[in-house]
Length: 391
Ligand SMILES: Cc1ncc(COP(=O)(O)O)c(C=O)c1O
Image (tube, rainbow, N blue to C red; front, top):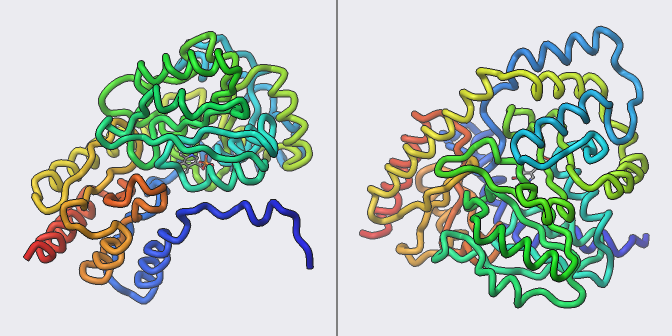
């Protein structure tokens, strides 16, 4: 049978590194004492009031079609939420409700990119960005997030990567996996370059609730940049709702209309009971949601203290997000080899940095998605393994 060209463009170059995750899961299923720190799914339950809202909504028969762009009360609440955190004047006409940030990335890319275009991806890059760009037919152009710059980009390198074919820059802040957050200098560079070269800036901000050192910055903070930006976020991480698939895009009204047509072709609206639950999440201060942020901070501090004291391995302290990068460069091993050997020797599964591009060849991503006691145990095992290598 014949397939469209798209199917050959849906592989991320780093997908092979996920085999440590697969192996860890298989060992766990066979009863091994594996600590699985590979995946970014919160260990917290969705806050109970959100669950109760969805259940009540189902019982009230909220089980039918909804508008493709989302129901008005939720779009209005998302607009108010975005305006409050960014300062950008935002109306419901700027909001599309989508099936998680991943769907937001897809519709944003589909609406502004096509074959022949180039899109700048800062690298290390979150694994699904390459297939999303691939689906549009556009070509990714990588700009390094440099470890020596705290995983920030050099504005001159970003400028040099722009060609007449460049249509967009796709950023992620706080960044998965490095935890780096957009810096004022980077924001200025994005504003300057995108206005000068007439580019879209797509900004994935799913981790903006989890920040540790300084306030979150977004392209939405600068009016000239906001009008050419698509900000994407979701409730997946902030409210431990990964399986609910509820996210949004914030974009100029005209682009939002185009996204609505795409959503009509793809999804035909999000489930109403999930939109009701999301409306509750966005219009209530939930203690559970705040507690999650506090927990990630405590876990981050614990892991960084333990690994920085280790000597044989180190860690890169994240400014935000749900992950810590474990630095194994001193061992001389690739992170892929280190990941497999660690899993076999100590039953700890970390995600090799190669999953995100070549820059992270000496790092592994550790997810802060288990309780502190389990993280402390994992750090001890990592240290013991690294010390055995040094011997
Ligand atoms: C950077 C980044 N963007 C998007 C997503 C997908 O989020 P969602 O569950 O809202 O689709 C993830 C999930 O891990 C992520 O890390």
